[in-house]
Image (cartoon, rainbow, N blue to C red; front, top):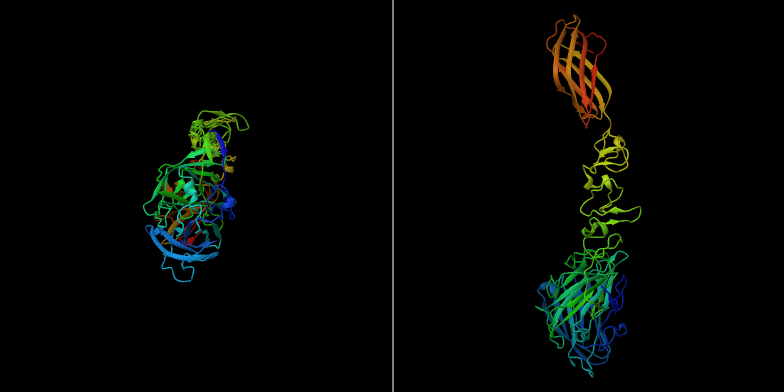
Length: 521
């Protein structure tokens, strides 16, 4: 794609900037933004905001027709007439609209109304060289944080001089502030004092250009007097402050230009729009947009991803190894060449992030289960967390090996063991406990109790599980009748198993001791 020239950029930054208000001259001249015209177009918004519209009659006794289109209320039109003397100025508070002489206008808008206002100087309707009835205007919107957005109102010469052009505006995210709202409406009969909006719509082919002037195709866009087709965000990076749809939502670009090329062109219809309200953080700007081609282009060539240049050349799927078009390409971004694998990393021992998702080799989920050899022997990749804790390798690629990795539990270790005997007429038990760290289970496999006569009593064979309380594992045996009634020796064997299936065996063989009935050891 080769761009011959850029005519003009609309300055939309954090603070208020000039905007074109309309005149009989060229819409490209910012010096003419305060020139008078016979008709003004302003946006208003009472959704957690306040709106004020100022009108001035600079040189003649003037009657104006004031029309309010309430978009949120089925585009209902409210209107009244007002009069001005020469050099007269009046500010309309859209929450309490009063006429220039202080009387009530008869218009009472809903608390959360929003839409467009058209002010027409009744004498001298139309663009006549000798017209006398002219007006100048601007509007202000103040958000809930007290920040004020303002710009000059649009004039009709913009529409009439550019019937077949494009509607263009720039957007950005400067210092974290989103210039995000695109507000537009199609109007009928703008050369008369009876402008209408309900049911009117123009269809645009929408193209988004990033800051490198690379175009991205978007869906066709309609701006009409309905809640769904009146207000948009730019794209995923710059959404609407009122959670409306985006004109180019599949992209995620923070600065550039939107070009709306008119597809349907009805000579009785014209488009009025603004861009720039912030995304609700109390700062931003609002500017007018106007009709004029900013790009003259040769036919668009197919964009091809160049793998390894750090740029998303084709505007789809992502940059370099993230783009499916680069699958199998060998690139070198520093450190040596490697192969692009956008569908998932499979080269799991080359030391590169082949799918450029910020995870490399065994740390990448694509390498789960892969057997690799990085020089010290073969081992298995475990990107979800190391479980092979005795193989001497860093299986999950976090630079921690085996028990140094928090994923691995502490090693199995028997630290302490003890058993107590208590024999009464009612309760004849032997209770034992062991302190074991790193165990998943402990089980006794045999137990025997030797009397003073050397006879084993109450032999127990077969697994019996210990119960756990922290690192303490306990087991209790209940003895039957004892004859003789003296226990001389206890012998118990048991084993504990860790979370990897490793087993540690132990036994308890204390010195002989004597416990009489009615006593506890």
